[in-house]
Image (cartoon, rainbow, N blue to C red; front, side):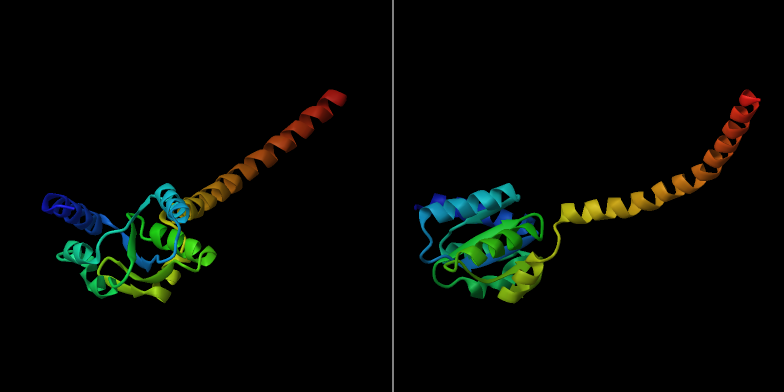
Length: 172
C-alpha cells in the first residue's frame, strides 16, 4: 500500500468514525474468509460496516474524533465495526460472537463514551432506533384509538336504541 492509498484509507476511516453512532473493536484471529464475509453481510444488512485496517492507520484515523479514547484497543489482529445506528453494530457483532468464539469483542465507543466488552454487550441488548420509534408510535396511537372508541360509544348506543324503536314500530 503506497502513501496515497494509506492517506485515502485514513481519511475514509476518519470520516466513518466521525459519523458513526457506535464503533466496536474486536479480535478476529482464526476466522475464515467465509465467516468474515458472513459477518460483513449481516453488518451491511443492519446498516453497518466491518473493516480490517492496520492498527497504526486506525489509530491515526481515530485522532480528532469523539472515539479517540479507544486507541488503546488496537493491538493484535483487530477489526472495526461501525454504524450510524448506535445499537446496530454492537448487536450484530455480539450475535456473531455468540455463534463464533473466535470473534472476541474488546470494546468500543458510543460518541465520547468508551465501552468495554460488557458495555458493548449491554448496548447490544437495547432495542434499535427503528424498534424504539415503532414503540413510540404505538404508545401515541393507542390513546387516540381509545379516545375515538369512547367518543363513538354513546353515538352507537343512541343509534341502537333508535334502531330498536324503528323495528318495534315496523312490527306494529
